[in-house]
Each structure stands twice: as structure tokens, then as C-alpha cells.
Image (cartoon, rainbow, N blue to C red; front, top):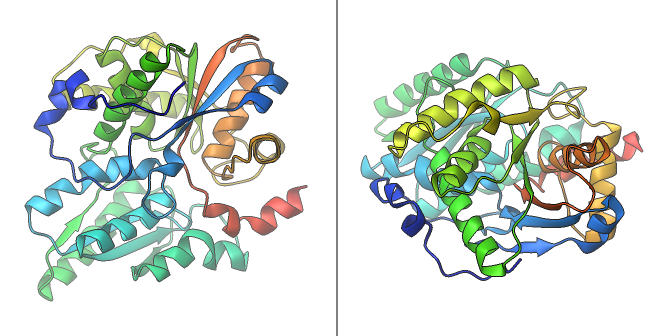
Length: 350
């Protein structure tokens, strides 16, 4: 697969032109062949490198922020607020985008992963948030999306009273999934690269967390008639809850681009086989995926998203959901700064 492509995703999905985008990343991101790791697994393996999209260590949230921030630009905001886990990549990239826009970032960190490890609480993305000048607050729970969003709104009210012009990025299920448009666009970009190379994958493997990367890519692929199986790997919640979430999010994204009915029941395929013991926690298969990717391909994965997604890919090969000899495209969503916060956990797990 070639990393070179001059096609415009909006030419493939014209409905995207109706939605303003604030360019933040480098693109198109490359697709790299992973021959040694693929040989060990008995497949042909490539990685779509969204960890290489330019903004402060990159990651999938760059694409999402390009759409999430556009209403704030239209509103002449000077401050952005967002909530996420202590080691959230979304939070880190929002702080970075705020710097690029000349805004102030107020970030709220949720206690999703119980840990007293000093590295987890000060290094990685938290260190970068501080370096980027973000104003940090904390929220005591990790699974209360509505409560976390309300806390942001309350803080925004206080900022407004002090003369700021705040814009809040809401990520709960009651909020429009604008960020999903970034992965509608990414699917078109990826398909154009695949078509140019003449080597089409039999499967795409993608993380499934908040759901917008997975749902957006799925809607984008089907919108251009690309019917490749897209295998979601649970990184935060169990399979049944995640299926319900992706069903909702795909329907909402379809509606945003005016293409209702694209996604069928069997398009949504998700596994939670490598999720235990839970979000942001190490396990043996995640460790294996991180070690083999690093040692065989110099490909760095994080324990929360990309490492767990590669572990899910390994599991699909071992259970024969991905047959030997298949061509597989792994969506690398970044998150690499988290490995420094997880240094002790990674070392102790070995």
C-alpha cells in the first residue's frame, strides 16, 4: 500500500463539504507495511499511521477535533473546555489545538483508572497538558458522562462571568458526534490510498472506545461503497454496551451527512475478548502486542488503545476470525505519550 495520495476525501463524500473543518493535522497519514509481524502471524499486515498526523504526538483525536472545534471558531471563542481520563489523548490534543488557535484550554481529568502510581498521575499526557499551559481540574468519577459534562458547563459559566468566551466540547451520548466526521473523512482517505496501491485489505481492525473513530470509519467506508469488514476492538466497555453505542453513533453520523440506512446490523462487529481486567489496565495479550510490535517493527503502541487493539487483532488471528493469509489493515490511533505514564505498570507486568 502506498502512502502517497492526492485525492480529496470530500470528492468521494461530497456531503462532508457542508461541515466546516479546522485543519490541524498532517495528511494523508501513511500506510506502512509490517512484514515481520505479519509473517509471524501468518497474514499480510499494514498500519494506517494516524499516530503520525503532526499535532503534539498525533493520534485519532486530531481528526475529530478538526470538526469539534469548528463551532467554537464560528462563535469567536477564546477558551475551550473538555473532559477525559487522567491520561486522555483527547485532552492533550485539545490543549495543543488551543495553543494553535490562540485559545486557553481548561481540561477536566476524570478518575477512570484507579492508580496511585506517581508516574501515572504526573507523566505522559498530564506532563504535556502542563507544558501546553492547560488549566487542569479533576472530576472524581470515571463513568458519569452526564455529570462530567455538567461540571464542564458549570465551569464555563464561571469563565463567562469573568469575561471569557468559552466553548465546551461535550462527548456524552446526548451530544452530537461531530468528531465522527473526521473518521468518515479518514475512511475515504484510506480507501483512496488502498485503491492507488492496488492492494485492498480483507479486514480493517480499529479500536472502539468513545465510538466515533469506529462509527465514523464504518459510515465513511459504506458511504463510498467499500464493504470491507471493519472489526472493532473494545477498549473501554463490554461488547453488548459497545454495540449499542456504535448503533447510535453510526445512525447519528449517517444523519449528519444525509445518508441514512448505510449501516446494517451485521456491519457492526465488535469483540471484548482482550478487554479484561478493564479500561486502561494491562493484561498479558496487550503486553505481548506492545512488545512484538516494538521489537519486530519499531512500532510503538500504548496500553490503553493501540496496544489493546493490536492484541485484539492477534486474538482474531488465533481464533481464525481473520484467516491465515489475509490482508489486514490496523488503524493506529496513537496515544504514545501514555507509555511513559504506564512505565511502572508495563515493567511490573513482565
